[in-house]
Image (tube, rainbow, N blue to C red; front, side):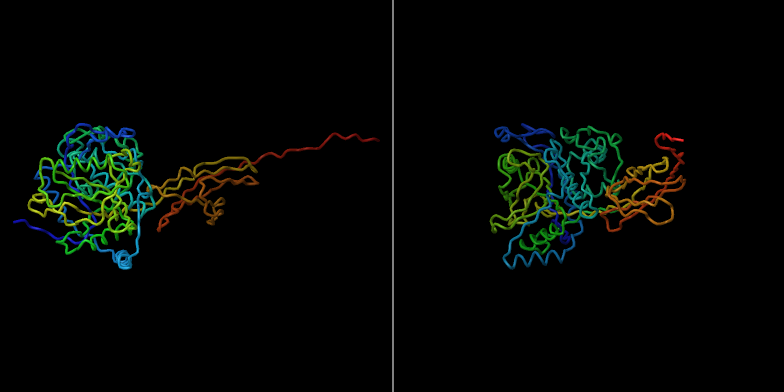
Length: 466
């Protein structure tokens, strides 16, 4: 008898990714492009997560023990009012994701769970801290499971594994750090990461004080019907959260159909065939995860769709690396034999709560400065930094009287002159521009204004007659 734990409402569509590649006739690796080759698209395959039964049971147990995402009453009320009134609406967070479409390609590595979860984290970083910055995928690949073997990130995982990893590590690093960009596109389960974790530069970095995955209630066992499931998911997107969508397909035929759809259909086509009710084949079935960034319900029920950002590059017809998934689907879709001791639900929606603690900036007034009296001195605070990447404003006190002699300036440099010789302290204060706390820091430096000998000018020679 299967047991079931009902965990509340979470918008996380958890696609169980299988560890492996379906019929690896052609594997597109990171950095390669399909552009201009429709014929080769037909044979292109991508990694799906294909876990063994033990791993699948562990993932299912973790999924159904997640806390349910709390209902966002304000957003939900607005969504329901739109539905009842017959109004239509669309919402997209795609521009909130700091990505380069051609770079967003997992290649042969089965780590879609890292790409989708990282996208959720990046959106939260922008929403909460006004930081628009790509976060490293390679950092997880190099560190998770020691970067090799059966616990390698390329062997698959889910958002719960992602949250546990970052909860233990306590920080994320930007994509632009040295060796933190994507290097494992030609890797697969059982391999070894191309970058050892010690070779990734960890500064700057973004500290994480709290991270937790939640499941959105979308199943009939959650006592949720289709309309309510849709409203719950929309309410989190409307609150500017990325949503992790996880789905499973039952066999190789279903996966071939999905990959052909991805390779050969335009990004305006809508996918909705999840083979509900089919038997799950543990050898050829598997799962995948994508980042849901929005929705559109402006064209009538049959054409309503979710906007998904994938991590399979940019085949012809998908310049942004996105696809559309039908909105009016069976959210309690089951594949027989999938759940083991747990339910057979094949579609799950998840969200990620992340707290990036804000840190005070570090002021650097430069100097010491020396110049002659009457000379404009260039004061330079460009060495000031903010560990969280926030923009700064600057103000100066040139005579150390405790009063700021300038207003807040967005440029780190400013000029000032003394008309007489002077030796004293100059103070700088920097402030975060875009945060609620607007944390500040101060620094001081010295200035020496030297006396300049006067210049005597008697004018032109004069002739005096006696």
